[in-house]
Length: 336
Image (tube, rainbow, N blue to C red; front, top):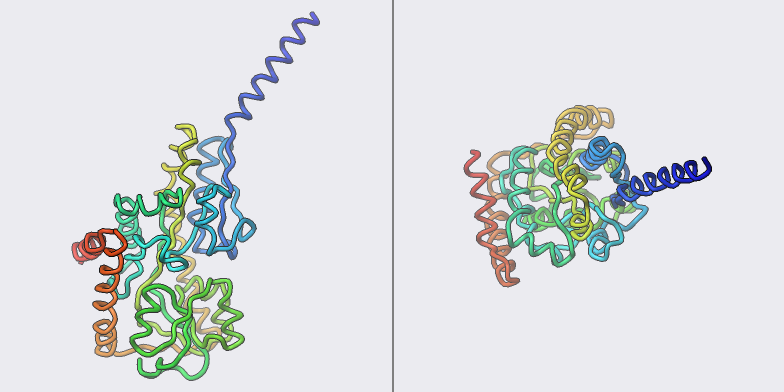
């Protein structure tokens, strides 16, 4: 009887050990706090856990694992398995995806932004570009066109941006330079303090970020239709970690991306945008609308030079710059 009991105990321990061996935990490095910008990652974690009965979990950290500008470096060394970053934070490290940050591309919806991003992410040149950091692009964080909130007198014309210090990254910053603004690049978490201290007088963000990072708390005006472009902020995974997953866990992760993005879009177009108008009205923020003719001149001055410079620079860096640019603009043209 004692031998039977011992055998049963050993069998139970063996089963428990096998179950533990199948369990998988990934650390995920984000920043700020849970908000519209991170809803797809939160949903992805939920779906992966459900599909694997809790055997595969994504432990999401908001700033506890790395600074946002260092997330790609953390992925490269395997400090964590998944992270979010923005291309404009370190353009030299991810030049291929910066094509998506060119000004005035004419992207009209979050759904279109997703399609464009995934097409660029899957291009062999982009795959190789991110492979330098042992990173695999998983999904974008689609954002609407950026607009600017600021303090002081509201701009009546684009000429009023001359000399104005604006937090604007990537192609948006380059576009703002064409109207005389002085773009400054800084992470989202640094913006409110910079605005309060006068380091910058205006900030270019998508609506959710203006609300999440408090730029509207002291703002006096907001540009409704400037729409110079947006930023591209992918979610990436460590390639070795992805390869080491079991087939079931890998399928659970990759098979949940579309549903996570659907949730993100529904939340952004719904709850986030529903809150945006009242947030401006409650604070008495002046809404600035520029004439179409003035915006057309702005686009002419910013779009072509930025695209030409990007193609030249990326080609000299060994990327198929013209091909990537044509991929993006060709997809946009087909949708019009």
